[in-house]
Image (cartoon, rainbow, N blue to C red):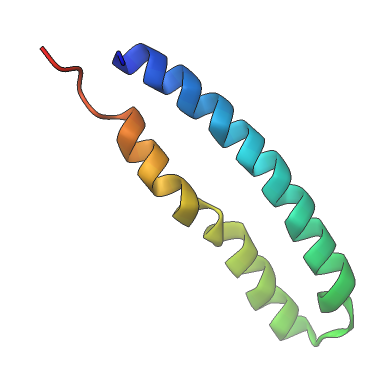
Length: 69
């Protein structure tokens, strides 16, 4: 698969994943964290804001692979 095609497929997969992740993060934040102390809420939101990248790292690496010659 050419790099251009990989980037297109990867972008679509990333957008779908982030859409579902946002729904999950909103549900988790609304359901559990609203009654917690402010410091715990801050840590929770920082973790939720950064953890989405971990499952996408292999996809990003795959998208950046050079074409075979």
